[in-house]
Length: 220
Image (cartoon, rainbow, N blue to C red; front, side, top):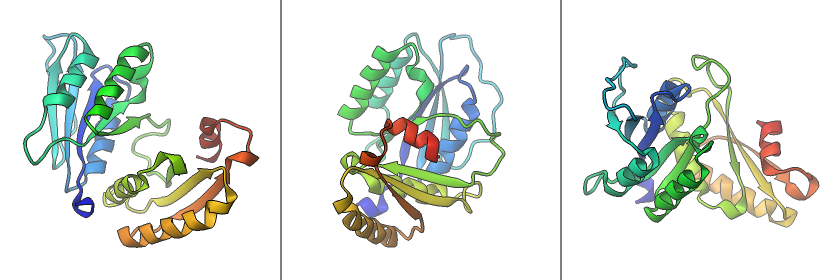
């Protein structure tokens, strides 16, 4: 079942969201030719009409969604959207949505967790969207679990023209050097199984007196 898993993503953004189209394009790349992305454009003005956007990709569906309370609407969609056999399994949300709405955002996350969805948080790049990415960095910690999910998404990304020649790198942050060999062997076996080629770098958090976010900023 895991082998045939396909992303069925619910994407949420507002019309005023900075670089909204980049979010949609990224979601479309994640689903490739075998998944589904439903792009919910949340508008609080019910008189809004859809603005012209890029031609939708295969498997991408746009839904102009009037709402009074965005997070309540997002939770309702997570609970009730979908059809038997093709239920959603992932949400894609701009990280900026949490700013100024921390309590509502956290409540939405609890709803996502209860629905057993994967959660992806998007932060726009400072580089022009037309510029080809040089590398995909996947950060992972042993306590995080689900590294197969990250591998699967990377495989879908590399199947698109925009990301096809992008290098893939795993950065594993750990606090026990004795486990590195075992983690390396398991990851190599998993990459062979999923037919993915990637560089692997281990960072011992015990040797770096910095928060995880600072490590990400420095290395990526």
